[in-house]
Length: 194
Image 1 (cartoon, one colour):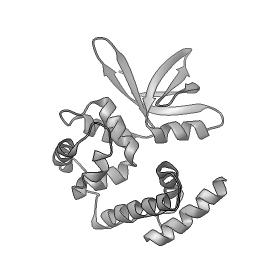
Image 2 (cartoon, one colour; image 1 turned 180 degrees about the horizontal axis):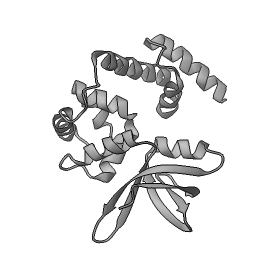
Image 3 (tube, helix red, strand yellow; image 1 turned 60 degrees about the vertical axis):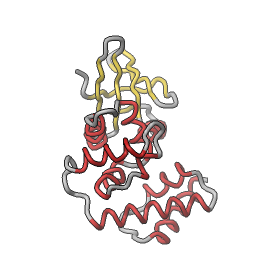
């Protein structure tokens, strides 16, 4: 079982990378956030936590930037009816902390954005994962989730792509509270990227 890989990225596709280590190139499926982080790395080195799926006709590797993403991925695939590709799709929707908050709050909206995840599947995910979460989700976190969602919607209304808005908000300090303050800081981030 492969648990971790470190090496050089020799190819980056839309949803996967080929990571060469020890003279062998491994095709690793990754989230959009992981892919963007890898592409920003000038030396093309990457360190990925790996989840290995062995089937009769295939061996698939799923790579994550950190163990938190990997652990949440493993929780998602523990839900009956959610496979590795569906779990990766869910992780592409929002950062892990936001997804955990959505589960804790019973918010199906974040999960139903994923192709193939309807309201029944989203409710099932919430029902099965709510008890597994480690309890760090709090009222403060749920307020933050609402602020973050409002900030993303505000930036989208200003003409920015949702992915760019989300990326800019990730760079905003968690010390900055409130939707308008977070939008203001994100706009500075977006302005400095141009």
